[in-house]
Length: 340
Image (cartoon, rainbow, N blue to C red; front, side, top):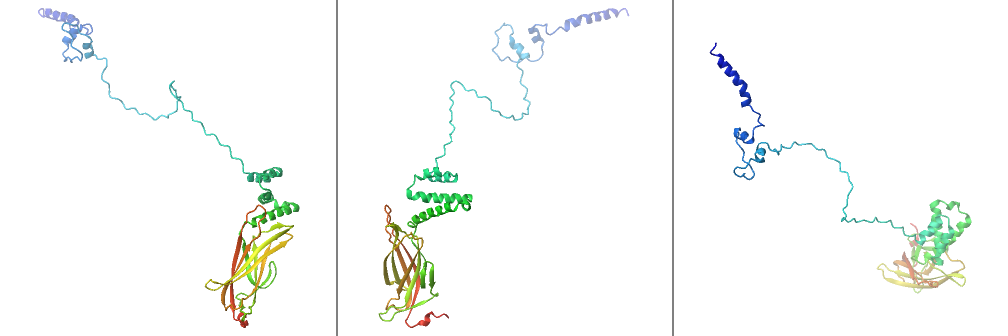
């Protein structure tokens, strides 16, 4: 036991001394000693190599303790779409602002004179209606006022409530208007027919349908023929305190081939009356021409209105024509018109 004691003491003394010598703080050692003792391979510096004998610079420190470590891979972050809101716009001093002028609403065009008259009639302003009517000719003022008043009354249902005097005045104005319009409308023959007897306008007795007229013998004419026709849109002119109508009539007889075999000029007839006529009819009378062979013909009635125009109006020659089937049988065949 005595021999081993020195060995134990030596070992204990070495244990007390060796930790301080073997395990010194790394931070206290100089850099060259740290590098010399580090068993890891030394990376190559990226900068220029130091001169021989120069002290180690920050390259060594950055090689082992880099200030800019390698970036980590990005972590995907879910972003929600944000609502874009218009923010304030800041214009630089050199920016140019172009101002667009907003289109201004145009003022509605003024009413036409006729529209203004009708508006005044609807709003019961007769004085303003008269002022607007002064823009038209004197002959047209009464007609325009009558038509507009009638249209206004029809739209509002006031015709039944109008006084009789006002209705009579409206009718007179309409009659004046109709008279002026008739001179411009086409001349028309209406209700043309063969008759046995004619008593007046709308009073006549027609022959039976399919009636055949007897032809003449030798130089003697045949059966008498009466034609009734109503004339519309004829013109009349005031003259010497009365009204005058001037008409000319012609009859044409055509065969089945359309050729004219007989033409009768009935001449010009002047009709005068104290009041302007509203109705007009024609009473045309003739006989079957002598030596006209029996057969089927067409009788054409042609009427021309040759009434001279009033002062300042242009001449408007107008004519109307209508046809009737005309059958002729030999004389003595009285049973040709007998009813079956």
